[in-house]
Image (cartoon, rainbow, N blue to C red):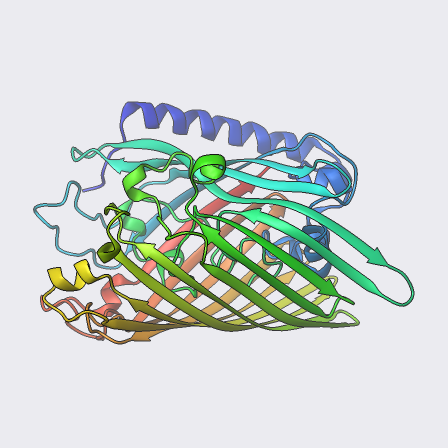
Length: 455
């Protein structure tokens, strides 16, 4: 049976749907060159395809990457506000058997819903300072246990920058500082952990196995922490970034606003280094990047006493990635490959609770490859493959493999309509009977339809 939202969420969704319809009507009445676009496009005077490959936001072109590295300061100051929303519907091939202790059992499908929405404050502040601040609302943040849900807002990706560029016939240096709340959100390539998964994921249980929930390379620290990094881009060839992170508290508490204290990531001190190195090259309509990244994070167990060292564990991440783009109207091709190796060392209290010896760790390896094509910045598709493997000292077998097929249509430059089908070859270490109750990996195959707009 499909879960129902409460009346507040229904009214909110109706207002969003009405606003969405009015927005589309307004867009259709505007001339081509003046179509409504987000804050950055208004600031630069460029349309979406200048910054986004084939108009496929948020994937960046070389111009888009330069705009980001120069601190979001190219162009003239304008209204720095944008909104984004997703309307979606999803379907699982065969939902899991309901857990009688669960508030709301997983459903096979849901009718179209307003899945999530974001408000952005983004753009140029001075000639050298700019920012990107996102606050996201989830109408399904809390399951009330009676078939209804309650919504909630919280801080999402945030990136405040100081940047400068020195360019002449002999040199081209871009350098700057980034104050942000998510390791690699400052990264200009979409193979980075913060950006490779970009279609917003709805909360309802029918979306539990869609592409956005499949394994992606990422950092064990997670997001909504606070970090300061310094970066440099030399002769549009070598990019290097080095920073460190801490708990988002006190003066930087706004970077975890809306997240309850027990759910916040708590880091030990400020010695949680992050680094990034990439080599980029452009020739004609082609550009390619080869990169590596890593982070060490000392993280307290969720909701535990941060005054007790026995609650402290750690994550060590190292990754490699590659991105190739061919951008020549009317064609846009992007190939992305990323791999992340993670070693998690558990806290003494976690191990004691599991009856295991201290110093025990697990490793997880996540690989992902994706190729996408867009024609005339309107019609596109992608094919992505994912694989996760690792050790099982303190957890079950993480082995998961699969493929996601996607087709999308961009009728106007700030609206994308997409259909994804995700298939699983392995889930939690097995192809068949992975849960001991006869459930197969293919039972999780999912269809996901979305309409994603930004204005």
